[in-house]
Length: 78
Image (cartoon, rainbow, N blue to C red; front, side, top):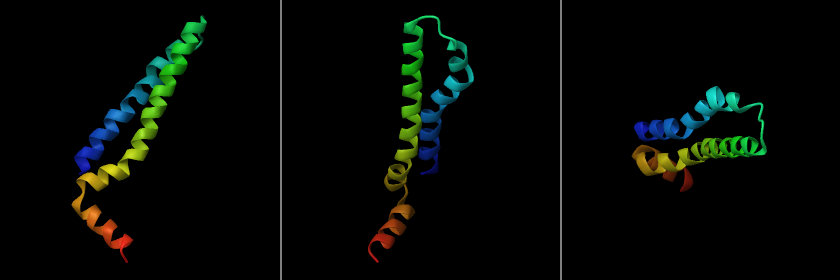
């Protein structure tokens, strides 16, 4: 379970780390409208991946964690 969540975290957060460390800084200031549009689209994509990671953790725990499912079921059926 922990490996699944960890790999998902790395896969979904690595693009935003790369963007904010390298790519995002190199494209500011933009010279053309196309550069500005490309930068905005790249920012939107990495931001979306970041929020998907935050939203998917609960479902990953439900899918892969037997103890988590058992405790969650116990909480919901009390």
